[in-house]
Length: 167
Image 1 (tube, rainbow, N blue to C red):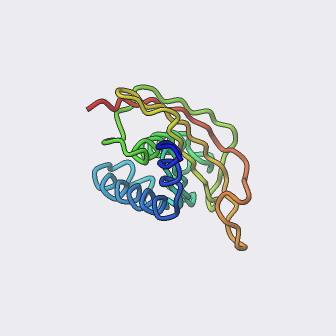
Image 2: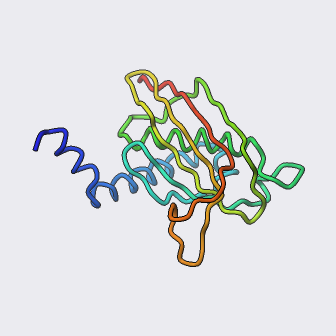
């Protein structure tokens, strides 16, 4: 086996994936007290899976997430794009989540109080200066023994995010 194949096998082993998940959760625990907006909007978010370059989280839609029409506020989707993209970057082993240089959110549908959201963040490329991420937010299908990702709900929003990461 070559070195790349050996590294790929090591990164996909259950113990390595558990370490990535634990590291991402620890990064979130360090970030949360430093960000009032994240503490307010994402207090109850749960990071349920992580591997290098990819994180998945669940958020139960609460009154703080709603706009005046009683549906998910667009700023929440954009904050989730920022948050999930940053943690996807950190899951690659990068030193920081970076500083936002560009963020786009496309609103496809909405969610209401009581809905669950599944947030998937992916680091498309992490370079020496810039990192590029994509985020998809879907209504989650939870309960009745359904595992995250086993049943996919409708897309609520998609996002792209570019971050400056050079130290």
